[in-house]
Each structure stands twice: as structure tokens, then as C-alpha cells.
Amino acid sequence: SRLVEKSGKVIGEGAKAFQQIEQDVASVAGQVQEVSRSTEELAKGSEEMVTAVKIISDVTQQIAAISQEMASSTEEQSASLEEVATSADALARLGQELQGTIARFKL
Image (cartoon, rainbow, N blue to C red; front, side):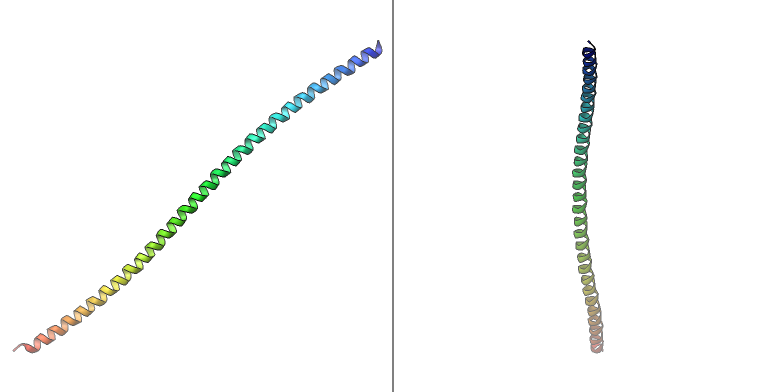
């Protein structure tokens, strides 16, 4: 009878221990699921950041290309203005020569 009591007590303690283990396993499983969800959110956030950085890089490249085009256009306009100035000087000299030639024919 004592043996039966002791066995019953041991079985009861074992059952309690198994219940505690079951609760602990359930708790750990919940924590693992939470970590898994957090990891998925981080991965999604990382993908969004990579996409944003790519967009910024593309915009930066477009701005660089536009800046190059503007610099090239500015150089072309500057060269054109120099040609116009040179032509204006040449026309002014021709005008003076023409006036000198006309002055010789005046009586």
C-alpha cells in the first residue's frame, strides 16, 4: 500500500512535469513563430530598401546624364556666341572698309 501511494505520487509528479514540459514547448513554439514573422517582416523591409536604393541610383544616373547634356549644350552655345561675335567684328571691319572705299569716290 505504501508502494502504491509512492507510485501514485511519482506518477502524479511525472504528470505535472509532463504538463509543464508541454506548456514550455508550446511557449517556445509561439516564440519561434514570432521570430519567424519578425524575420519575414525584416526580409520584406530589406527588399523595399533595396528597391528604394535602386530607384535613387536610377534617378541619380538620370540627373548625371541630364547634367552632361546641359554642359554640352552650354559649350555649344558658347562656341556659337563666339562665332557670332567674330562674324560681327568681321562685318564691322567690312563696313568700315566699305565706308572708306565709298569716301574715295565722293567728289
